[in-house]
Image (cartoon, rainbow, N blue to C red):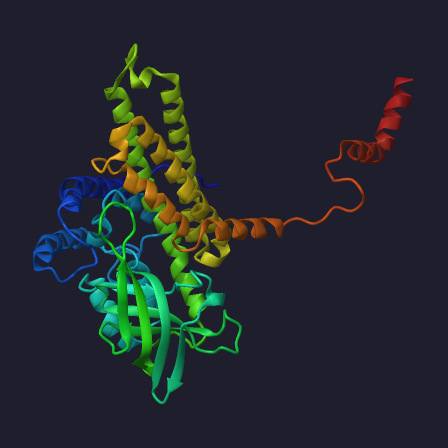
Length: 432
C-alpha cells in the first residue's frame, strides 16, 4: 500500500524556488504589463524573455511536455503543486511556458501534427515566440458540437471554411488558429468534424470584434471571428479527417484540471486577504476576527479550500496512474463542477468582510468573483459536467426487484431470519 502526502525534498526545493521567483520577479509585472498573448511589444519582450530564460535554465519550462519537446514531462500531481503557485499571477504561466490556451494547443500539435506542422507551428510555440487560438465555440451553439454550423469543404488541394466562432481567446494576437469545423454533414456530429490549421492573415479570416468581460480590465481579450471562403491547404488538416471531437477531448481533459490547479492559488489569495482583513479591522469590543460569524466564515472557507484541493490532487493522481483522460472523465468533471462554486463562495466572504472596499476597483475581489462565473462556463458549463458525473455513477447501479427497496428494514429483517434460521434454531434449542 502506498499512500503518502509528503512532497519529495528535491521537488520541494523547486517549489520553494518557484514561490520566491513568482513573488519577487513576476507578480509585480501583473500591474505593469499588458496582454500576455501579445508577443509584438518589444518593451514587454525585453522584460519577459530574460525571466523565461531563467525558468528554462532551471529546467522548469513547459513542464507539461516531455523531454522530446523540451519539457521535463512532469505528471499531473507535480503540475498541480506547481500551478498552485503559478495561478497567483497573470504572467506566471506564460513565463513558465504553460499558459492557456497555448499549452493545450501545443499538446495536440505534438500528438497529432505532421512533422511539417510541428516545424512551422509547434517549435515557435514551445519557444514562447507566438501565441495561438483554439477556435471551437460558436455564437448559436456555444460549446455543444452537435450544434456547430462552421463548415469546411474540399476544393481540389484546399479546404474552404465558412462560419463564425465566438469568444475565441487570444484571437487578436494569435499567429495560428486551430479551427474545429464540420467536414461531413452526413456523419454523426462526433465523427463529422475535423481540425484545420489557419494561419493569421489568411484571406477570409476576419476578427469581427474583440469581446471583453467584466473582470476588471481589458487584458486577455476574446474575439468574435468570422470565416468566409477561408482557403487553407489540404495539408493543414490536423490529425485524421473526422477526428476533431476526439482531439478536442484530449486537449480539454488536461485544460480542465489545470484550470482547477490554478484556481487553488486564487482561493488561497482570497483567503489570505480575508484573514488579514479580519485581524486588522476593529469592531465593537475587539477585532473583526473575534466575532463568531467571522470565525464561521474563516472556518468554512478553509474547509472548502482543503476539500477542493484534495479532490484536485486525487484526480491528478488518477490521471498519472491511468495515463488516459477517458478513464478519469468522471473525476475531471467533478473537479470542473466544484471549482466555480468554491471560488465564488470564498471570494464572496472575503468581499463581504472588506465592506465597501471589497466592492471597489482598489481590491481584486470583484474581478475574482466574476472570474468564478467564467470558470463555470469555460471548457463546458457546470451543468454538463454534473450530468457526466451522475451518468457515470448511475451506471454502477441496478434497479431493485420487488416492491420494496433493498434497504427496506422489515424486508431485510426477514431475509436475515431466513439466512440464519438454522443457527438461531440451534441456539434456541441449546438454551432450552
